[in-house]
Length: 394
Ligand SMILES: Cc1ncc(COP(=O)(O)O)c(C=O)c1O
Image 1: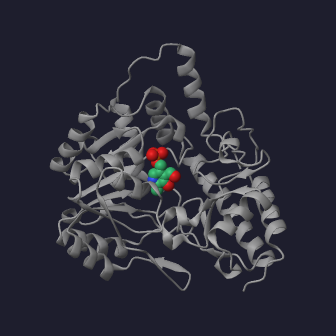
Image 2: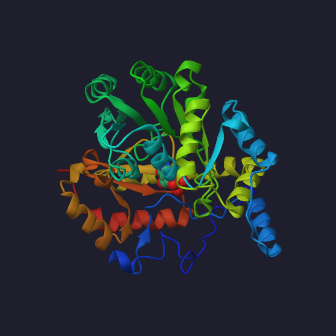
């Protein structure tokens, strides 16, 4: 390996959300945090070097998007997914969650219904409710260890509630599904039939396990893509979340104008100087680094899977197809959600995301971030075993 993902980097005293706020959470200082979705790896070396150069320059004035910036963004999606985009379609926002909230405001009115598929990344629900819109849940269905969309329920809910917008998570956080072209097309056809706009959050698109393929929503048939807003960012892929740079891709001119109108209304001009430059350099130079990272993450996943199977069979792992988040099923151990949270935090001393944060369907589950050096993952497994080894499936 050219890059050293085994390197453990001290993130304390960096104001990291993951490592620096234990006290505020009432957690012991020796807690191991494996919750929020950023990685414990250094970014692409070329990005780090370029940011140092920029910092050295000493002038941090207003910064715009250059032709090279747009080429880097459109080039990435063309190269990685065969998705041909136009620079005119690319809009910059300070984050994907920001863009989802903007989509809610741009494409719906207060009181309108917006569809989501729980268990799902919790800000989806928040951006709907906090803008005075109504959450309509079309829960994913877990059958034979795999989550699927319930398309019948989806159509019924869209029709009955006059749904205007669907927030799609693709690949899906937390259940780890990488939706197939067939699944996406079927959902898109339903949305198209009822004129539902789709905001596809594809922030995890670069994390796909061997054997699975991410289908950008933008590569579906043109008439389906027309009513879509595709949210992308280099932040998960290259560990740049603190730089707040996202690219929202809207092929349709009318939707794009509506979305821009919303951004203009709150005077949002997208990312800052460091975010834009990090995005450009990462997309231009980061492919080899990403390929090695994916191999390393696959090793982490295999380690966790084998460990749980051999040492903690009461904890069931939902096989992820993408993302670096794993969705663990503790239901056979018979704890209430509160008991499970207490045990995880104060016995195992692991800070994970509790399943119920993602909706009631997450009851009995926990989400763990495995984008960390192997030694951290090993320590997490040791802690899990110490807390749960006596437990037998009930
Ligand atoms: C599905 C999904 N969307 C969006 C985000 C956050 O994006 P941003 O930091 O750009 O708002 C995350 C982070 O975990 C995520 O998992």
